[in-house]
Each structure stands twice: as C-alpha cells, then as structure tokens.
Length: 81
Image (cartoon, rainbow, N blue to C red; front, side, top):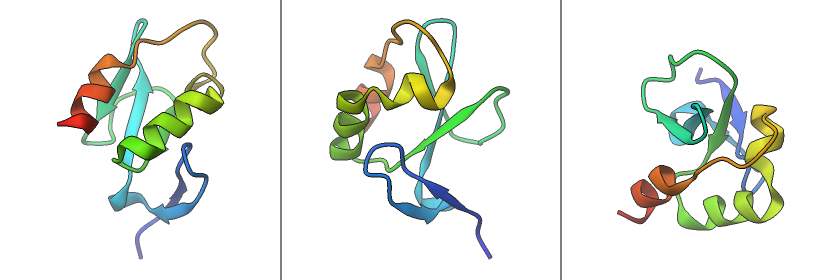
C-alpha cells in the first residue's frame, strides 16, 4: 500500500507516487525526485494548476516552515516543460 500525502496546491490527498516532493534549498525550491533530500518536504501534484494555486496561497513557505521568499523558477520550468 502506497503512503498517502496531501498536495499543497489543491489540498487533495493522493498516493505519494503520484506527487512531486519539493524541499527548500538555500533560497529556492528544489525538486526532490528520489524523496531522500534532508529537511522538510512539501508534496505537490506535478501540474501547473496546483503549482499556481500553491503560489497564490503562499503554501510553500508555510509547508516548509521558511520565512522569506523562495525562488520557484526551477520548479516552474520543470512543470511547464
């Protein structure tokens, strides 16, 4: 049975294998493909709509417990192809 996580964009629950883990780097969001990077992780559906919703709600800072702005360009580029 696959563990269940909550998407920080749409707030729906989904299997861990269908979500993308994101961690906070120095001042940017880093995609954690292997789900093994240290630190808090936030889970997100790999869609542009969930990404935009998470940005709009400022969910990355809250989920990762980071104050200040995080650069989301790497994640945005990956989701937009």
